[in-house]
Image 1 (cartoon, rainbow, N blue to C red):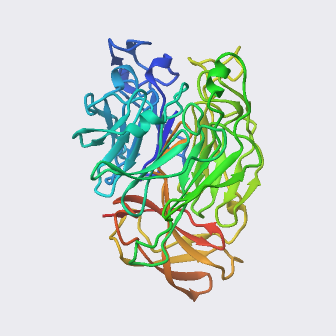
Image 2: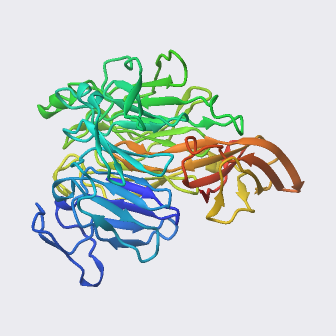
Image 3: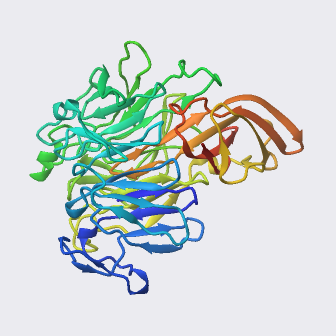
Length: 495
């Protein structure tokens, strides 16, 4: 249901505590006793794990309160900060540090108000903003301070809600883009004012939970190492469902999902949505930003909405989208339906981890249309089969960078790779749940020199983004992209 990649290259994966017992035991006889729990009050099973993609090893972790439909972000220090949930977890703030023996720590009243189906974003000053949630038309911050009304969230709620898990994207002017249902604004969270309103996205589809489309901030092209004012910021939103689709699915009528994507250049003076059609309809799809700047659209259903047993006709084919060429390409299919409560998340080696799917109210492994799915898959994009893959050879993991710094990266190209276009990208993998990866970000750095050293060895000079509004302090995967093929990412930290 929820997943994040931490700077130690391990995935933190967690579900909810009120499904019942899991099949993974907590270590050393540890148990969780919670009189407020709605399922198992004495629970010795794990509902969260640390997963190592390299070794496939699993380490059980202990969550103390219910994380059902919660939100999160990786902080500037590389700590997963996770907020809200259900029942006794709706006010909780949880912390997980990337170390071999660390476990969840929790502040039960870390939030001022309960948050269920909220969204988070990391801000340039290191704070985290937590926006919305069920019956919440406001936002607050971590560290805890005050609550601020956001009437926009009330205005975008319809009879099926369709405004939950609002899409948040930090813009290069330091303000926050907020999208819910069909509408979008720019929020100046420093003055707590809405400073811009945009046209509604065209069409007859709601885009947020439970109609569950997905959204990304397209890669930011940093063509000037110092001037941040000219950076183009463009939002892309894909998929969703007709606004009444959820209520009709409850009655057994499953409407076709939406097949459109909308792009909006929010830095223009009078932007309009540019609409495109996907090769297929999709609801509950995940949009994953790849280190090349392309977008993988994966998972989901062709009919219905998010919710218990509300989806039909699993979409098994991923789609690869090029923002530059505005072209979709249908990829080879999986054989495993990934519906409600499935995830997709970028790994440092350029693959995408795909896992989960449980559209049932409990763990159900037989006798239902779509059983609870326990497997993980690794999806390998086409660039991993093209040859000529670069390998960074001069960066130590955890290298600390500063804004505006000129850096030199040494890299080698696989034999036969030849001399091709070189890009340098920095990627925030984010935190994924319910078809939205919070805080996901790709920066395409300004490259000022590429030199061939000898044979298959090269050096590329590039500039780190100049300001925290473009690249908030924190951990990034640094990639060299050679001829459209990315290197394995190296973790670096912007102070």
